[in-house]
Length: 250
Image (cartoon, rainbow, N blue to C red; front, side, top):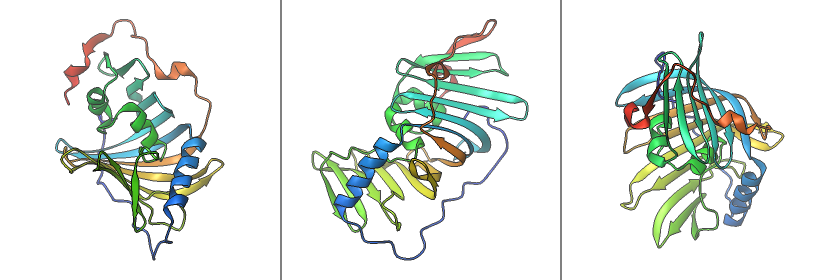
């Protein structure tokens, strides 16, 4: 998602909710989270992605295909065709760079996923996030603070989820590391109605420790589409150089 980028664009935060939000009961919010996780299993969409980090700013068009929990395809597009195709499945991650004639293969790991997505999460969490859902364990111990749910493990704060809306849908999620610092956060905005329920057409993802941001603006997202398994794997083309995934940096 972040290699072979073209153009330059600023990151703009999703608009803040206007007016006071409804006061929710924790049982309503937990029920809504569970229902939405069952309703949304896959996504096919074009997206405008704007990236900002220590290495610069870029904006590009992306074809996003997600099959929860462990299938992902990201295809970075240009006027002349694809400039990067990343596929991830339950076995491996592959990045194919057609212009450079480079094929990259590696183990499916959090570190290798970060090299391409710039999101410091495991695969099942990334696929959950990209379909507009906060990657939280709703069965974990939790408490309510206003319109937020705080999820804890072993007495430590792990996830905070805000519902500042007139609908029981998340507007902000934060993941804390063992030291109590925010490792990753996401804002969900511009909800649209779909046959599978409300869907956030804008997702702003931040990795504060790495000072990286991604704003994803989906265009006509299709939820629960049937996606063939072969979309999420790539064979090495002939006459293409293969490199270890470590060659692309962090």
